[in-house]
Image (tube, rainbow over all chains, first blue to last red; front, side, top):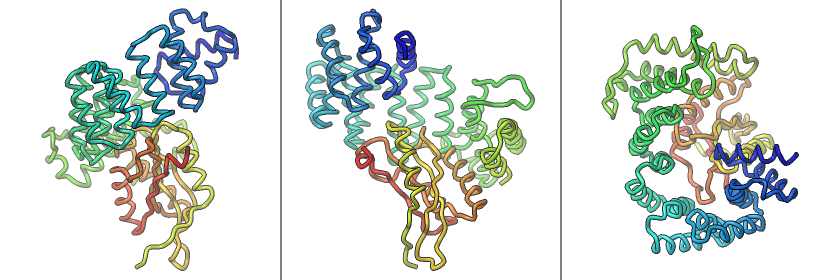
Length: 292
Length: 124
């Protein structure tokens, strides 16, 4: 791979915050081989950070340490660099050692958000879930606009002890902070479904479909996450048919929609249209399931 | 009735591991397909259907996947005999809430389902 395309690729990974560690590592090494760090200019620091993280993921601590050295020389006492230092400690000295490192930094500066989030991650890694939840709750109280933190809290609640209502509450803050993102609306829909709040789930699924607006075909042919949302509609409508009391026992007291039968039929038509250009086992699996 | 023993085919085992390795920093899950031996004492787990590597703690797509996998299993004269998950974190060794739900659902049609939790530590 030549240098220009390597740099382009790396910039893309950074922009999308993708965790493609093996690719970032292999591409990043090209930059070093060509002795081209200076060609990145101001981006070179973000590049080093991204390469350090990728190096840790693929087990090349030597490369990570080299990157860290450059960064800590340029940005001494930076919280972001301290995080990287901590992550390296997690990889080499273990979670408990890293935790003490983070606690010490936080005692000196309690509002160091980057290190605080790292501390919470390590608590989760050590399976100290309640402690992680407690810290993360304090964190979002302090840094209310941190969407990533609210998402992590929602995930913590959904993954441990069926706390789906609390997960939904966390997601409601995400929706307030980032109202244009259909991805989060879909997550709320699936969380509501998991919490057995079917009327609420249906509304969120419909909202997702509205936000991703797949063209003017009749019926619409969905792609990407819209397909997921339509499956959610079909599944929810089927649940309501099978268990009508779910319609009136919504924990969030969401009113049920009328015309659920027609909505279910529409979902089936849409999903069939989505599978129309696919062949073989996949489309057969879908059409068989829709006829259940 | 005593619980049967489970025999994992190479294909099944390989698929589980490959699924987990494909998404090294994510939790993954799926279902297991198989059939009971004529004697009734062994369940041969001959195949696996990988299902999710995103929002594995949320249930609707898992339900759809389970439904489709069940139909597919029937087309091959097999049953859905269990569930597997490979957690994200080294410390996660217990069956997740969704895992419990899916396994209960499978129990409705297959009374002795198997639940597998792949150990991330052993994988690394």
